[in-house]
Image (cartoon, rainbow, N blue to C red; front, side, top):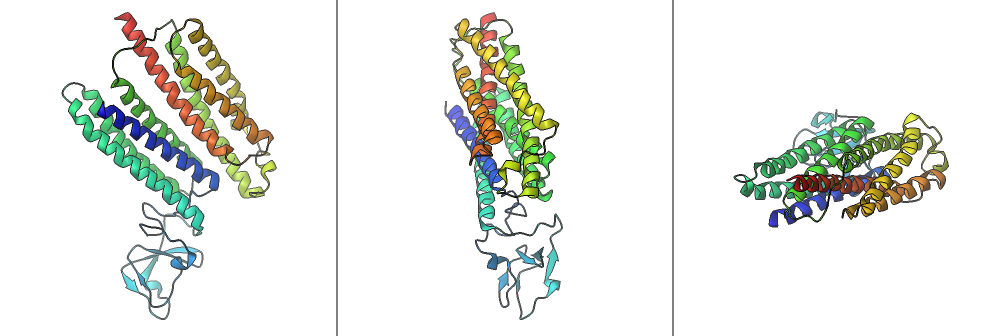
Length: 341
């Protein structure tokens, strides 16, 4: 039971990272820390631009960053500056050429990284606790350590996102990997619960739920592409012209919008099947609730010009919807195995 509770805490922390990431996207803070894993070369990032400007008679540690002529310059060694700037003590940052400091963006991104570190630590603790399952249920131990490596890979992906200056494809992969980690944690939570189940299985229910889960994943991927379109429009028309953010559509937007109808109809059909046969899968109600919120925020963004908070809520609810649907799939196939045994 201790392991299962720890897995639940870890899952919550991973979702907090997803929430923090959504806030980073909403506020445009993805490049708030232009380097990784430090932030402008500091473990605790600066709060004022003066900290990133060259000044005489000031100490800099090796690796700390300053902004010179719109470029990032990195200290080659521990130095104390003299009366004049000496470029020999500095080297240009070569990962990218983004050299803008915004304290709000910096600290939002830094907090996002702190949540990531906390979640990573929780997965490591979970993996150590899983060792006791090695003799009886090796799969639990192996999957727990897989989550640790997954978080490490996710951290590396986060670094590549920064180095690429928020390349859309890398952001999409970063999001998919987060959902994979969520799925493995949910599986661990489900597989370590007590065997008793009061749920029953009917023909094709597992297949229908699996298709609904895949459709949700496709929608999330399409949603990241639509978000990229919005980001490009913001760069062109500005933050204040929200009515123009969706003025330049492409196929991804139309597919994402139209596909949402199919998602709702499919899940309503599944819900009707569960209610009609009194199968006991109460989480289908959460699926419908999350779908309702998704539709509401999606419609609000399109027709009401992106009310505050709708973008991160839309993403967060999508990730929660994926998690509940995945747990439902596990419940259904568990009930099927019990029923057939």
